[in-house]
Image (tube, rainbow over all chains, first blue to last red; front, side):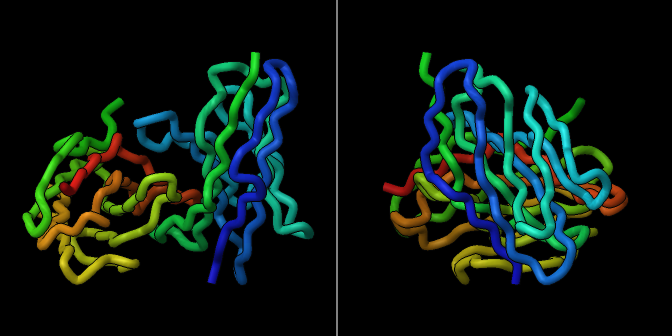
Length: 113
Length: 115
């Protein structure tokens, strides 16, 4: 069975600093991996997705993630944090088209001025 | 571009009452998923439908049922509501012809409060 683990339920960075949100997955077959962002009292918005093409994936709002099979990781990064990046971030996995998403526990990102 | 529509956006019910949540997928999307997100929790998969047939089932209580109609909209029916059913309920849709990504597009959610 596949699963996702997000290390760190809360991450705090200063504005302009590097953002690194960690995600490790477990899957017996090549997975599809996703990062979603959720702002308070809002729905889930897709940031980026890995679909077995390029291992470095660029998403919206300056975010990117790198799929590393050897480390079973899909960490999310952004070179320079902005105040508007403060939100909850979820890593998710599924293993086949039409399949349910399995979410990690979420990481709350705080950005300090 | 059209997005996933959910109604109502907010719903307040008493214990043991019944609730119906509706989801209207993006046009031409044939797959609908329901997720439940409790306070401070990650979304948990409940159930999904493809071409009006149930395609997968997760941790959905027996008190809940759902279906997808001929126009592809879906309804989640919840009976004998309990305090623990208070949560944000998301609907997502995708197209069976979405290529290699199976991207799911999420609606804004229905916030259900059971008193």
